[in-house]
View 1 (cartoon, rainbow, N blue to C red):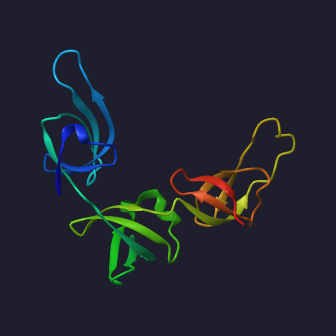
View 2: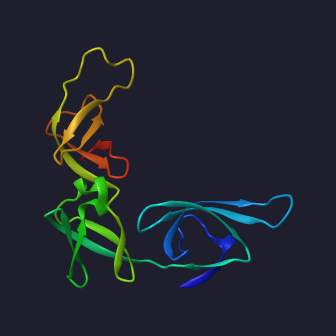
Length: 188
């Protein structure tokens, strides 16, 4: 762990503050006309998700935390828990489904994910930005809806609904953005 000055905090930095782990979401350097400059930082707690706005002067120091990033392979889901395997040691890791959130629907057998660990405890997970899925049902195209870019709802094989262009039909494979849960393009 390294000590950094309060004015060196940047978005994405993980710091220890008030006995908790916080990630800097947004920073703003403020130079008032009277008094010293400070860094206005919006923090998000990595454990419970609460937010906090804090001022850090350049003379204050905080501990910058280095997170370990490990690659895991998704194996299966069992009783509301998702089971992953460490690709180096082959040890298994169980995470609750709500830890991953809505994006758990995009997990596929063998999918590689990156888990953020702090002192061997998982505190975050990142999935691939895009996945390829098959459309199980899509509404038919309504003639005459060409005046504006009209999208129609479609159901994916994992049960998620997305909006797709009118030329996409049932049974086609598309690429979906897992962060925004939106259609990207047709799969090759």
